[in-house]
Each structure stands twice: as C-alpha cells, then as structure tokens.
Picture 1: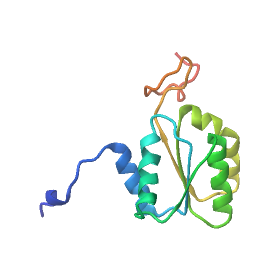
Picture 2 (picture 1 turned 90 degrees about the vertical axis):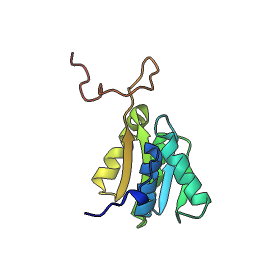
Picture 3 (picture 1 turned 30 degrees about the horizontal axis):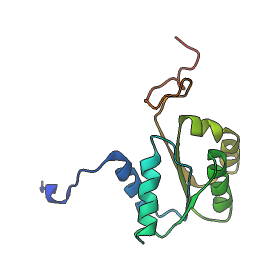
Length: 133
C-alpha cells in the first residue's frame, strides 16, 4: 500500500464541494447565495473568474430564477449546477416539478439549514419530520 499523504490537502467543506463541481465541468452555474451554501458559489465564481473553470456563471435575483435559468440551459443541451438550502429550496418548489418532469440533467446540492421562523441559520432535520413530535 503506497502512502499518498504528500498529495493530500485539508480544505474547508464548501471549497471541496466547489472543487468537485469544477471537476464535473458544468456549462452553466446559476447562483442566488443563501447561507450556508454561499461559500460554494463564491468559490465557483472565483474559479470561473480565474479561468480555472470554463462555465457561464450567473447571479440571479431569486431562488426561483436560479432554477428556472437551469431549466433553460439544460433544455438547450447544457449541464447545469446550482446550490441552495432550506428556504431557498422552498422557493424553488414550483420549478422542481418542471425539472423532474422534463428530466433535466442538472445537479444541485442542498446544504442543511433549519427552516425559519424565527430566522435560523443552524442545521436541523425539521423538514424531514414536519409536524411530528
């Protein structure tokens, strides 16, 4: 067994996700930053700006728009990526039916964050057990 620790690097989790996305070479990245996934799209934006990633990076006005942009990009034959969390996913709800119904080839990671109210940026599982105690 060889020792590859010389090639190992410790990085923040959001950077690791962004690096994995970069390796997948999405054609379009649609972003509406929302905590805690903001660092993922910030890193991707920097990768595009630095020329490390040949992708169209779009900052949009809402979560609904973020997913709608990707529906168009994927319908035109591109690979799409976005990232969201809790309230953001709830705001994408209407477009999610289009994505699945049209079998769009897009990837979206959903960071763990509690749904408000009150405003909460901590992680939890309440969406999985809504209404149950």
